[in-house]
Length: 189
Image (cartoon, rainbow, N blue to C red; front, side, top):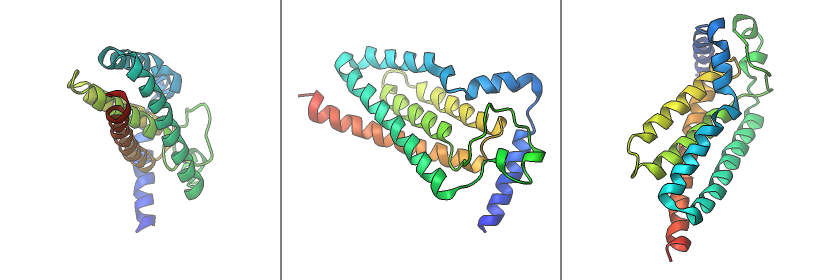
């Protein structure tokens, strides 16, 4: 059953990856670059500051750093534990795909870009939802686009992406709950 699932995963990867074309490559390389969205993160921090104040923002910055570290390190544990080769390193896949990424890491299950972007989207989206009702949907769409970029550039299978998004959503929700525990216990006194 696992072998069949992995075959479908590979087939879906090849289909989605080969939808790409050279005129779009630079856009997707820009989307997949971690530094591209620094202005978005700065804007989200500004909104958090505006709605929660400086003292709470400092706590949020620490929590965000812990959340990203947590999702990143758990992602690495899974990558080393499963040792699933990325498509750009997999025999029988490399020769059928488009590879445009800057580099190809060793293992790919599951996607750190997907988990980090989804954790950020869920965490910030839930915190700001009382003030900006539809922002969470925009952030979820942004996270999905970042996740898809990993397939487009040739470094992750769809299952890597789905599991990364799922883990990121759980992490973002967990840290959202942790924030309110800290806020109610220490900040609202």
